[in-house]
Length: 458
Image (cartoon, rainbow, N blue to C red; front, side):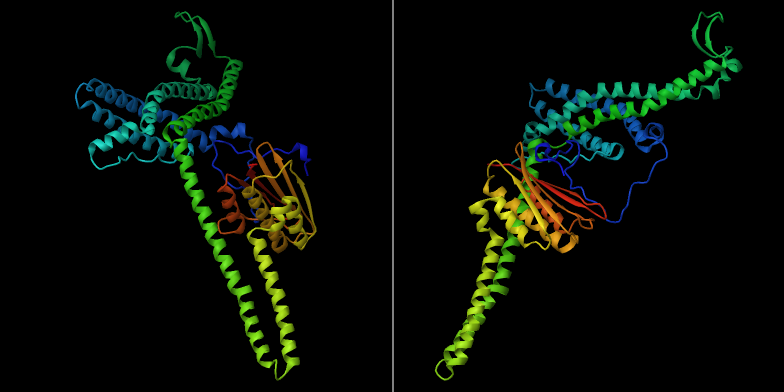
């Protein structure tokens, strides 16, 4: 276990989608490779798909660049008439159409899934409303910028990738086709220097032929990484200019998170209603009936009435305990009064395995974040009790910069699964609704470490 001072918040790559890592309990592993990455890269499908993407970019970007420049120039020239604005809108709409093609091409060849931006819709129906929506849309102008910027880059990437690839494979295979020079070209080999009269420096000795093949091999092995670097620039262009804006993406995330919060709140209300109906309410109804019977027997059989009152007293205690448990499940009083340290210690005392709790917080976070942290640890410790078959567990809570981190570790059997439909998947969704992250490390055989990261809001 790392020291408190050495802990750092979890980090996710900005190019990757937010996901919840999970361990597979079936022990499946990627198929092992017998060659190191540097040797197998020239033959991998990814290399050839990215190379194909770079080659296709030149003709596609040339057409897109020509279309964009022609329509924008025509629209700008016609601005003195009423036709200029609609022509500009048509040009921008065409660029958005090309953007759909580019996103599909990036999805198929680069493995990059960029969401489609929201279509341009006017506030009212009609041509001019649509024209205004297209011209006011930042997405339309970013597609135009892509059409202008991508063409020179596509020319550069096409020339560099094709040149390195062709030269590399040609030099690497030079021992196989060296015979072409003396047989058909009337020279002994590749001419490094020639004065045109037959004198010069030619690669024709066995050593020079072998050295040429070695240089070609170096280029062949380097070319896939060059192609990946060039394709990375294309990925950045597609993501930055052809996807939805950051504001639109954030709005979509908030709408999704709001749905999760609403569904969670509705599920909690149904749970409270069910617990009240099946628990305390049923006991109170039975208590009222018992007291009624005791009242009837009070005059004729005081002893029986006293026994019934005693039983009713026990039912009252049970009903009170159920109401306390229910209130604790809504929001425990110890959390409000004494904070996370005491509240988590109370949860740990009810766990079926020994639990060590360490809380290192300079101050209390916001009540909402504190409540989410409490119920997250509560649910994780319930999983430890029900499924882990552990002999001990540990809960650690600390703050790093502007993040609150929770970590629950047990020495159980492992194999925790966060696939859709499981309790851990629901927990990850609830954390995601407040910009939190849930990371699960649970190899088969254990141990299991579940780390939750929440925003710190003091």
